[in-house]
Image 1 (tube, rainbow, N blue to C red):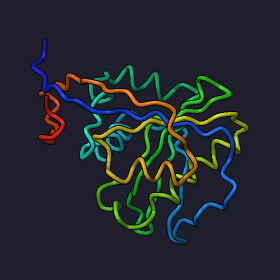
Image 2 (cartoon, helix red, strand yellow; image 1 turned 135 degrees about the horizontal axis):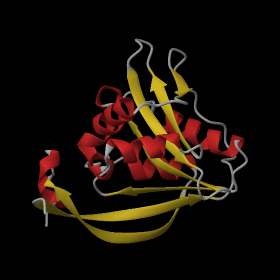
Image 3 (cartoon, rainbow, N blue to C red; image 1 turned 180 degrees about the vertical axis):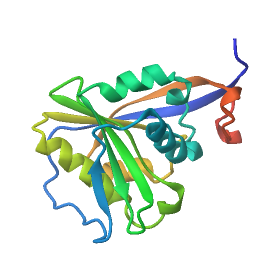
Image 4 (cartoon, helix red, strand yellow; image 1 turned 120 degrees about the vertical axis):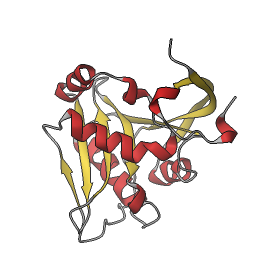
Length: 186
């Protein structure tokens, strides 16, 4: 068994039962969101690892290439990439419509260089609006105390409401080399 670091987080589960009434804030004119219909495992790992490293995203890092390839081939899963004006990737989100007519926002985040640039809420609303355009009946997401401190307030501003909190303990493999904040360590 791999050596692990024990981590404690509080996970907040959120839900949205109808589209937001207010119009979405606009993304900057020089950025676009594109669907990645044939996202490769290498591209997915780059997105997940780069966006998630500061927030202790670890679970998908333990998946094999075959497991990730199967996930990316699932027609109910879609990957959407935020492309900056300079052609740099600025973020991504992953939608999972497996529990249709519910859609889960499995992952959402910005690249480190795009954090604090004022695009978070507009990008999140792009994901929300995409889900409702598909005809979903409910949208879910969860966040935890390892995520960016503005994650939960941003989900609330976008129209999600909390439905429950759960305290979890994770065994994060040391081999992943993640920087684990002291306040999360058990």
